[in-house]
Image 1: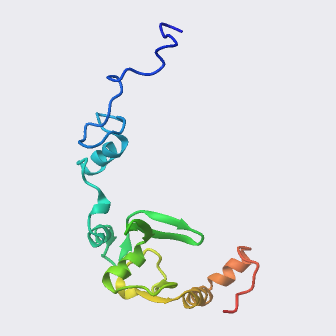
Image 2: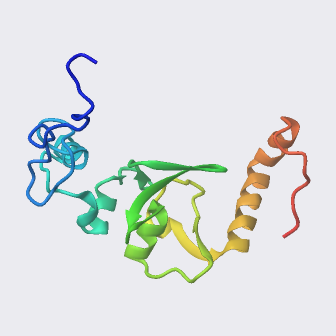
Image 3: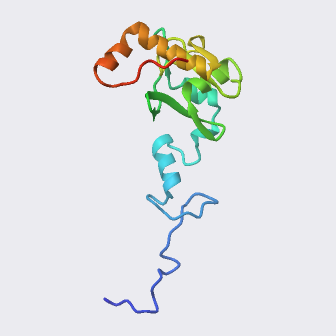
Length: 168
């Protein structure tokens, strides 16, 4: 086995390198840093900076384009069944950007309620375009918009739905 014996199956202690950041014992990924600190250095230019440690309002509004009628989310998006919504980490969990904007600018959302986009634009986070409503109302408004715009009939003709419009 090319100079390797059964007795030396582990690397010597001085060969295994750990992250150069204080209090980090993770294995080196690149440039003397573990994977977490290496990625922080690449993204922020600082191994100690963590986006989630910054206030939610600061992180939210820096990723919003306020140039139009709708304030559009330009950050990351999460796929859902019917399209993309902005996503952001809030209190240790991932939530939609429009819910975070509503919580910051308007206040708490009642349990089980949705935040409805009055403008029907899923990337809009403008507080004046958002309203907390029961889920049933949010769904009904979505169907009403599909009917008024003619999209429901176009979807039916294209075979994207076989079901008649549900009665809520």
